[in-house]
Amino acid sequence: MKTLDDLLGEGVSGRTVLVRSDLNVPLDGSRITDDGRIRASVPTLQKLREAGARVVVTAHLGRPKGGPEPKYSLAPVAGRLGELLGAEVTLAEHGDEAQAAVGALADGGVVLLENIRFDPRETSKNDDERAALAHELAALTGASGAFVSDGFGVVHRKQASVYDVAQDLPAYAGGLVLTEVEVLRRLTESPERPYAVVLGGSKVSDKLAVIEALLPKVDALLVGGGMCFTFLAAQGYGVGDSLLERDQIDTCRKLLETGKIVLPSDVVVADDFSAEAKTQTVAADAIPDGWKGLDIGPDSVGAFAEVLAGAATVFWNGPMGVFELAPFAEGTRGVARAIVDSGAYSVVGGGDSAAAVRALGLPEDGFSHISTGGGASLEYLEGKSLPGIAVLEK
Image (tube, rainbow, N blue to C red; front, top):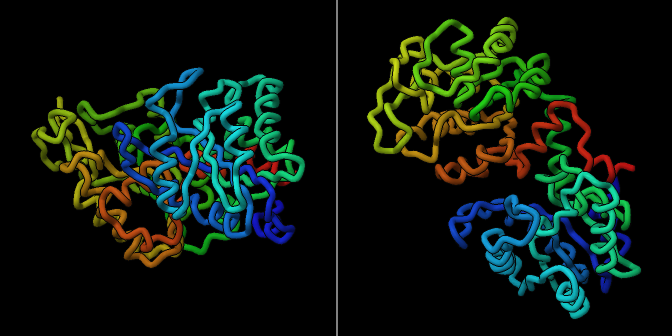
């Protein structure tokens, strides 16, 4: 892959550079509740600005349905990005407004295009439709334009602003994408051992491919979150009203035969899915009827911590419980602290895990790397080809 450093070496002063960033942040109304992805996008943008490039940023937010939706506007993101860059960031609608805003850019200036997914061609399955949108994006940069792919959270998508535009312009991997790929290669090609993986989240079916890909490569796979209850059911335990995928029980039973999977020994259960629910901590094989497991218990945290203390490499994806509700946050907090305390080379696999690190007040610098791409990270670890990476390698 050609990289951002290659582009800077060629010289970008006075050139217009289109950057695909991942600015898909959670919002509460118009308030950004976690700006981690915006902060991660800043280094690449700042390097381009300082080298005199005219920077045009394209990104998405949420999943608008086929057209503009005010709740998915990037306006709050433009404001926060400007604060972090220490420069005005102009938000421009696609079409004439974008052309005028880009045409007025000075060297070092930044325009953020409105949510690219407001145009249904971005996510179209039709190659020609995506290509048409890519041509329009490329045309904004002029004859000396370039494209920098820096949105790792979307490189597993074959979309116009990720894949197709990289075929219209000289394309380079941004610093964030390059770092993410290097980290994941380290996990897949040469992890220092012992290698432990911590997986949480709701469903086994969502993580089945990555479990099957990782099990031959790891020394221990620690399972928490809602997905652990299907594994517990596979051991013959009753799980009350906990989340359960009955069609995955036989699969989980076979996976347990590897002897590498570590399950919770106790869980925090509740009589309702709410912060005000009645709760109790029970053994994993003694969940009462009518109660649902919403976190792993303290004994499980201790057992997981013991495994993690001996690990040299740790990959974590998925919370151990419903950490957004205070009564069910301690499992995730305890396991995350154990990862930090282990001193291992540790990678947080984006998504809810990265959000939990920040929401629970854990030290971000306690982890070796916090990914910005949950789905992209998992697909890479599954061994899938990521379209947004493959197109850069051509």
